Structures are given as C-alpha cells and as structure tokens.
Length: 262
Length: 186
Image (cartoon, rainbow over all chains, first blue to last red; front, side):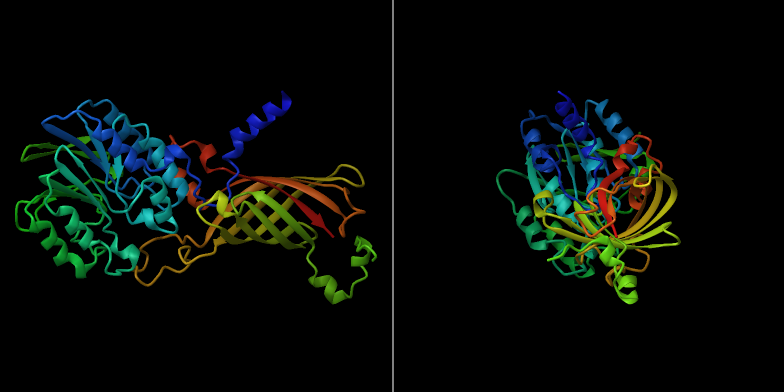
C-alpha cells in the first residue's frame, strides 16, 4: 500500500525530473499528430463549403494560443485548423509539448507546418516525432493541401529547401484532386527563402493552373497579395500575439477570406 | 592491497593534494543529464563549490544518445551541524551553464544567419536552483572519502523562464527541474 502510494507520488512528479532541454520523449498523444488529423478529416462527410481557420507564429504566446483554441471550439463552422509554423520559439522539445498541450484541446483536426524557430537545435527531430514529415500533403474534398518546408535559411540555403521537385510532383494533375492549396512558413518574397529557388517555385506553382491559393506565416502581419501577377492569392497569416486569426472559406472556385479577433 | 582511506589522502604531496578534487558527485536529472558525473573543488572556506559535470542520456530515453557538459557554481549559504558527524546544508544556491554535444547545439550563430537573428544559443543554456544537502559519515570506512552526502535540488533554466513569462495558463510545474544525487567528499 505504502509502496504503491510512493510509486504514484513518484510518477506524479517524475515529469519534474528533467534530463535535458533537448530530450524528446513524446508519448503517443504527442506523436504523428498531422497524420492522425488527416485520418480524422477523411472520415468527415462531404460539404460544398470548406472552412479553415489559420493561425501561426504562436512562439511563446501560449495564453493567446489558449484563447484561440477556445474561440475555435465555440465555432461550429470550422472544418479544420492550420498552424503556419513557429509553435516552438527556441525549437525546444518541451516547447513542442507545451504548444501541443493547447492545440490538442481543439475539437477539430489541426495541421501544423514547420517554421524556422521549430528547427533550431534538434527541433527537426522533435517535429518529425510529433507531427511527421516536413513536406506532406493530403486530399480533402478534391483539394490537395500541400504543406511545404520553405525554411531555406535553417538548411543553410543548400538548394534543397523548398523541395521544388517534390512540389512539382504533388501538383501533377491526378484524378483525386482538381485544386491545390499550398501552406508554408517562410514566403517566397522573404530573405529567408532561397533566392535561387524563387523563380522555379513560381513556375512550378503556375504550371498546372490548379493552385488556388498559398497561405504562409513568418512575418506576423496579415495581408492578401498577388506576387505572381495572376489570380493566385498569397495570404499572410497573423502572428499569434495579435490575437487575430484568418478564416478562409473555399466554395467551389471561390475563396472568401475573413479575419476574427480572439 | 591496502585500502585507500581518507587519512591516506592527507599524506599526498602538497601539489597532488592541491590538484586532487575535493569531491565527486553522481546526480540524477536536474536538467543536465539522465545521470551526470561531477568532480569539483571547494573555495572560500567551504562556502563555494565549483563542479564540472558530464551528463549522459541513453538512446532508449531519447531519439539518440546525448552527451553534455556543465559547469556549476554552488554557494553553500547555511550550515547546521546536527552532531559531530552529521551536517545539514538547508539552503544552497546554484547557477549552472550547460552545453550539449553536437553541431545543432551551436554556441556561435552559424554564418548563414544575419547577426542577431536568434538571441539565444542552443549550445549555451543556463539555469539556477536551490537545494539542500545532508553530509553523513556513512561508508567512511568503505570508501576513500570522509563520508557520503545526499543532496536534492529544484530549479529552472533561463529558456524555460523566458517561455513562462506572460503565460498564466502554462503551469509553473512545467518549467521546474528536480534532481538529486550523492557526493563523496575527501
């Protein structure tokens, strides 16, 4: 009895026995989160309107993230949530856990893109355990959502990030999707995006005429702009500290962009 | 073969005596390793400890094996003799700086970043703690030491504190680092 109680007490405070700021010992609930969300989405019944809430750059703004989650949970229109990266300000595994402790309270599926801060130190390993591949995609309601690692500077501008060949392959027309949405952290116009890949990036996005929008973070402010001089909107998502988020509705070929405070 | 005892240590040459560490430590957790081994010296009339730790995390507990080093300064502010053999140090205050081995734990911002791009260095994290220690004569006759001390510590580190600031919804327990260990004093 006493031994059992002692064991319980030890387990209760065993989390306090910290081994390293870089320890990655995520449990099942903090593993493979993006794929689990994709699986949940696939079981949702089809509607003619897709409603997505976007946030990003939540860094150390956990109280704000908490309020964002509360607001989303009270809004039944949202199909899923996208975080455009930078959930871990110092790239610490513990910050990944803290951020996910809030995000996992969301009632709807959520997908997290990789941000530059998330990659500092062994953050890449932490992201791969908690969320999965840095580049990934899925099809929902005939739209291919493509999450692309665009944090070129974190990979010392090695010419491989973003992975243009992978993006081109994902955008190749196929029977299961007719439109595509690209989600990334660093936008192509930013100094942290590999300047040698910028033209290829635009050419790839424009090639099949199936990309309907791109959403990104990193710059912490909101705007909708058209850097490719055509009809593809780039949506810059607010940083979490602004207590503002963006809702995007996709209805057939129409995109409606709206912002809300939380 | 004769056992090496505390009295033998005192017969060493003055130079060897000066170089021989004043204590060795073995610590569990405390943010500097799963297990850490330390050696150190005592200064200012046994009021200040300076300890070098090597910390180890086996791959089974992490995605791969982690090695780290720490330099720790501990001020032993209060000493209470409990008897002629036991001594309690109820309020030790410490500060440490910690480095994890590996290129990703850089100290100097790598060249592909503009200056000041990140304000912290993943290869140089620091923290502080308060702790207590009980010095005992246990095993005095079995080990080359004057006895075994048991200690425990509770602390946090700068990067955790920086995260906690402004976040009332993040529990304080999340940023706490507990550790305990044993020390052998010569």
